[in-house]
Length: 169
Image (cartoon, rainbow, N blue to C red; front, top):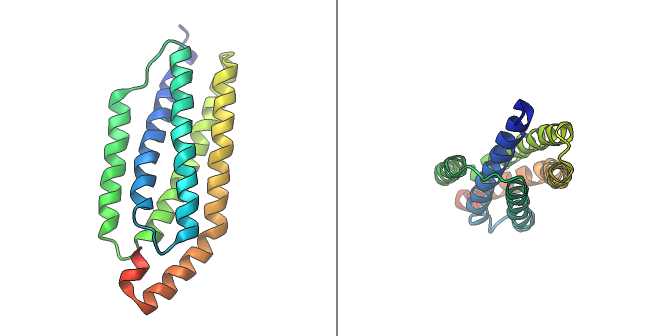
C-alpha cells in the first residue's frame, strides 16, 4: 500500500466520523427549532442527506476492504452531543447553532475537496464520485444557511424583543 492510499483511507474514515458527528449535531438542533419552521425543514432535509452521505462513505470503505473507525465515530458523536447540550443553556441557541452549522459545512466542504483530490490521485473513481456528490450537498447547505442567516437573525431579534423564551426555539 502506498502512503497516499493510507492517507485516502484515513481521510475517508475522518469523513465518515464527521458525518456521524453532523447527524448527532443536526438531530440536536432540530429538536429545538419549532419557532423556525423553514430552518427546521432545511435541517431535516440535510439530516437525511447526512445519513446518506455517511452510508455512501461506509460503502466506499467496504468496497476497498476497510472499515470506518469506531473510535473516531464515537468521538465525533460525543463532541456533537456535548455541543448540543451546551446550546440548551445559551439564550441565543438558534444563532449559535446557525453559526456552528455554517462553520461545520465549510469543514465538510474542505474535507470532500481533499478526498476528491486523493481519490483521483489513487485512481479511486467511485470514492471521487461519492465525494463529489457529498460535496455538492454540503455546498448547497452552506449556501442555504448563508442566504437565510440575515432572515434567521431578524426572526430571532423580533422574538427576543417580544418573548425571550420563544427566541431560543
